[in-house]
Image 1: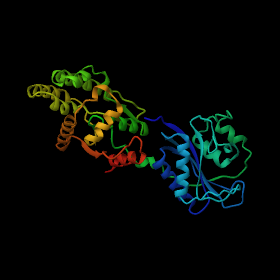
Image 2 (image 1 turned 120 degrees about the vertical axis):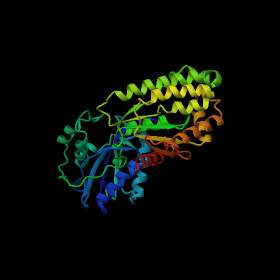
Image 3 (image 1 turned 180 degrees about the horizontal axis):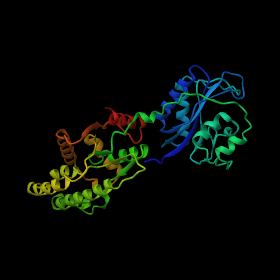
Length: 376
């Protein structure tokens, strides 16, 4: 998964419905670029460097997996979609929307199309004041001064007036506050770990990941399923029970909820496929004794992938012991999950078909999954 970057963006508008232009831009930035952490107050400020109507200006901080030049490309596309036509004239002019990258991590970028940090930000009060609202102690990586000091020494004496309306943060449309514990499940290669990681990162959740890599029986099982199925399933059950018991009992006051990339019930689903009938009966007795004492998720999300996509993902991630998994095995696992979920009454279940989605590389696909999870 691509690394996450912190980006500060300045927004301004002085044509048409200025506040709506800002809100539309904020919404599109969230949809196209990344999660919005925070948005400053909106200020009314006089046009800088030319005679024109007053601007509304603000600043936002976001996290994105895009590189800096791709962020710039996306911002230019957003400006164009909102009706801005960039002139080749050198002088300043009124604009429906103006979007500028101020900072990209602590990077210093100098190219024909992009200069980061923004070369003129320290000279513009309409940039510094909103930025100061969000990050007064942030250090400019070139000037080595924080935003408070830069604002104090700025020679721009423009009068900025804060308005009494706040822009809405589109990140808030995905509300996980009604859940304390979400389990994300799926077949082998469905992408449950990737989704759990993204949600935990974007929405301040405690992340619980299955420790599958530590199981010594897994590579042996894929070579000789009949011989190693029972010790594999028993070791998985013991490890899942131990891990989920420990992790769910440890309170983290700095996290809003818990998200895991598995639920212990998967042990029963897989064992029904892998074990002989008498082995499964014994296993089921042990499972029920352990499972009844475990905390159940408030929401169980099942990511459905068709077999072809599962095989593509398995090949892509390249684990040697998974490369010979057959279609019939994956289809039995899918059927086992769907049968379990169809009869589930203990907790809320949402089945999301992601066979035509790539939520890791395509932000629109990711947001559509969040929509499905959060809808009533």
